[in-house]
Image (cartoon, rainbow, N blue to C red):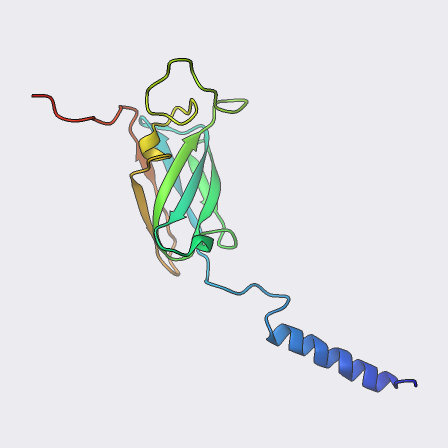
Length: 152
């Protein structure tokens, strides 16, 4: 049994239309937003590092990650977080390689990371990503260790 060229073309067109209508060939889900900004550490631009936007809601697909270079980061909308509230984690990387743990280092830093863990492992940083806005989010990190409590 042979099909005519017209029938074959119509069937192919119908299948393509059905696939597109069903979401195939395109990304579905929440709209992601572009985010950018500056990261300083002790008043100086962070030379190299990473930034993570960790959702404060149960939707884990809403987060995003990017690199910090010379104090700047930019995450395009295609890879950015969805609108919402986030905890933000920032880590540093030394020039030319991975962070290394220093023997006897009890400074509260992640694996020798120069950035204290209050900005990464136990982050206190927060951000709100708004829909349809520029979302320029700057972070000024202090080099001083967090106070452990008041002294009498």
